[in-house]
Each structure stands twice: as structure tokens, then as C-alpha cells.
Image 1: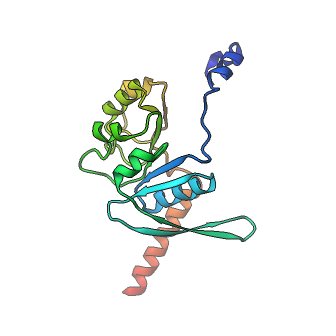
Image 2: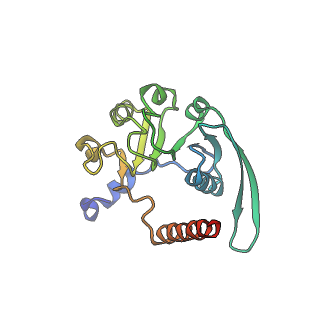
Length: 196
């Protein structure tokens, strides 16, 4: 909420009355690695339909574990990229670095009107100029970017666009994530040492 929230609270509240719920919507997940799988779990937990794309087609068995010890299993089969782009209300990019844009003007044109996009993958996976054009045309309603083509100095037009929610490449910067990384590295060192 901006500074004028103190004096303009009711008008600001009204400006958000066209929000969208996630339940029942389709989440397109591009990249079915560890992070993509976690995004799929979140989407399933929120009651979303899932469409997933992976460069190498695959089927993943996903287990959701609950606080009381119960769990549910889901099977997610990857589909082609065009199907994800055409049918998703929300798209999450979770891929490794690419040599060229994975999402460019052509891919943006395939998407539904009013789609939301989140890129926590790598800068350069999405063409930011094409993204801004798609936002201006109304094709893309909004986007969340944690990574940028030009880090650590993102383009001013990206920084100034009110349809973008931005963070400074902090996707894995929680204390919990850092602890897991440390544990995984320690496990790998132990495994290598045992093989010697």
C-alpha cells in the first residue's frame, strides 16, 4: 500500500476489487525440476488445475504431506509448451538458464487474455521488452519477477511499471533454504568421501 494509504484508504481498497482467486484456475508450470515440483504442490494445495511443461517429457508422482501425517499422491504428466501457454491463467517459470528467450512475443501471443506470469527462474528466460508490450496491450495482466535480464541493474521501465511485482533475486534466500542447501552439500560430500 503506498504512502497515500493513510489518506486515500477507501479509494485504494476499491481499486483492488477486481482481484482474482486462485482456486479453480489453471496454473502452468514451465520446468519440472525441484522448484517446479514445489510450485505444483502449492498449486494443487490451493485447488488449482495443473498443466506442466518440461523440455524432456516426464511424469512425476507428487506427494502432498499434511500436518496430521496424512498424505495424498498426484500424478502430473508434462504436456507441450503451447498447451500450457494457451490454457493457463497463471504461468510460473522455473527453468535453468536458456540460450535464447523461452518466452518471447510469439509465446506471449499464445497466452490467454489477462494471464499472470511469475519468473523466479533466470534472467533472460523471458523477453522483458515483449513482456512490457504484452502488459500494455492487456494480454498480460501482471507479472512477478525475481530475476532480470540485466542484474543487478534492471531496466528503469521494468522498475517503474505498476503491473509488475519485483524482488531482487531473493527466491532462495530464506534461512530455511540456506540450511537445506548446506545439508544437501554436506550429504554430497559424505557420499563422495564414502566412495573414495
